[in-house]
Length: 159
Image 1 (tube, helix red, strand yellow):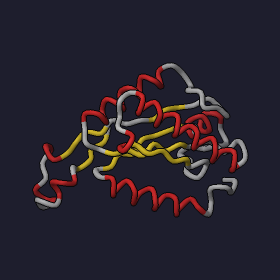
Image 2: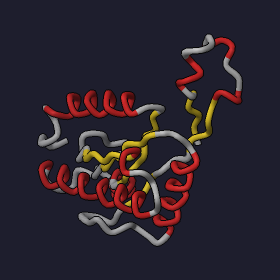
Image 3: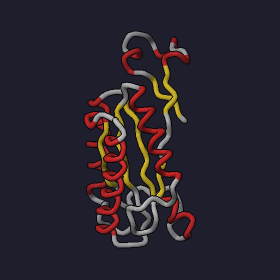
Image 4: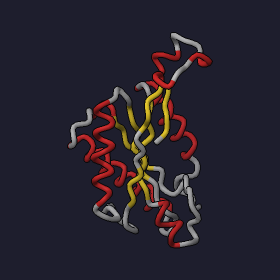
């Protein structure tokens, strides 16, 4: 879990006077997928999605569901696959009661690997959907615009 500062408080008080009560522990989301598929890597992935949905329903936060792939296929294919994975997880969250206005989905393809794609274990870990959390719809929109700009020139290039 990571902490996020509740932004409504930041404007009212100085950052130096923030306390633990001004922060929310954020539930991590990291869902793994089988190679070249929108099938979850195992049955525990739905448990993680249910826990993330519960967290979102208990807070007033927004989330971007980011789809990522390994680089073992073509860049265009990977971008499309990552979008389908992110959309699948977003749909599950909405089905579990998360407000559609609080959750967006975006595919990143192979543009943001965290692990070495030249090893099977690294490639497997790059086949993921993660959740990024934001205080406001504006923060979420700004992040999406920034990331779209960042990956626009690389999303169809082989990594």
